Image (cartoon, rainbow over all chains, first blue to last red; front, side, top):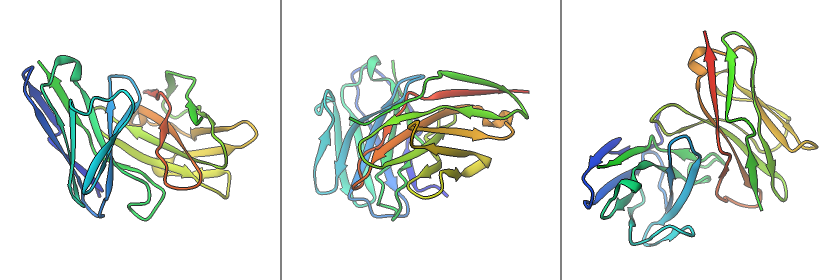
Length: 117
Length: 114
């Protein structure tokens, strides 16, 4: 069964609004979670690592004020795209870091497709 | 620096024929190698991994991959392709020595024709 869930699976919003994406670890307690972004026909780009109880770690070039990450509990991490614009339209995927499940495997959520009009 | 190369953007194969999706890597130390598959509008699904041991790794859905240290390759293979195997395949590498982040290749789109 699924190890990681995401909600919503897809969302359409107007330019200038904010969108929150939830990522849940279903079977394991996760002190960290990875957030990726994937443009059409491209590979995954790591955006940031959320940390339970502390600030997220952002990759170089990722705007921390645009992409707000909160790791509220050991099973929930959220990504909020603030003041979204059409160029933020993408597929956002969260992932459970290796070791969380007791194995070397990194498990991924099903993804959230964001379309900004 | 760690890197992964998938030299083919797309691989076309007829149903029932064997398939190979190529991957080469560059990493210091012993590599941890992974293959993931992604269906349209879905997240990545784990297929198989190589950590240590037998160079031929068997995974989900009849896929296997062969680790070749001298050629720094980890090609994904399947003896008989199915139309349902059509998807986007990602090779990924992680360096040894702890739970570091995965580095993904650009992906290869596999198209299996009836």
